[in-house]
Image (cartoon, rainbow over all chains, first blue to last red; front, side, top):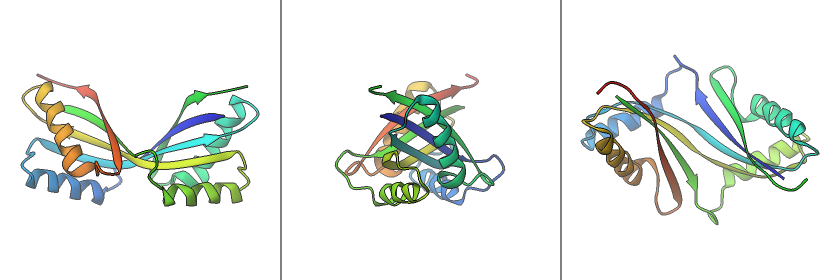
Length: 85
Length: 85
């Protein structure tokens, strides 16, 4: 069993209305120091495959096809746990 | 200027319908090895404060008040960049 963390972030230059809304709300709450907020996804996947190489390849594919939108988002796959085998 | 990454995840035992939907879709796409998917938030905050201790305290407060829902979510604040001062 493998576990991966996948970090999905908006590409630079892509507007982030959700992040902007949070920044404004934080400033209203008197956190004037907040200059920018960007909101992305943190996805944890538990996966059973033959070997680590297969797990990594499949996770990259899944990210490209479904977990991220490669047109506007970047992603980073990080293997965090390898149990058994 | 400080930069922090904040990882917001659902607490163990809290159902994650979004993660379940993604897991099912991945299995339909023939990734049978996927056992579980949990979806959280990855929040980047750029902040100007007097010192690192203030930045850390404020980020914890913001997470508690706004960025996470402490009833059902855990969060982790990670300082990643410290420029100037």
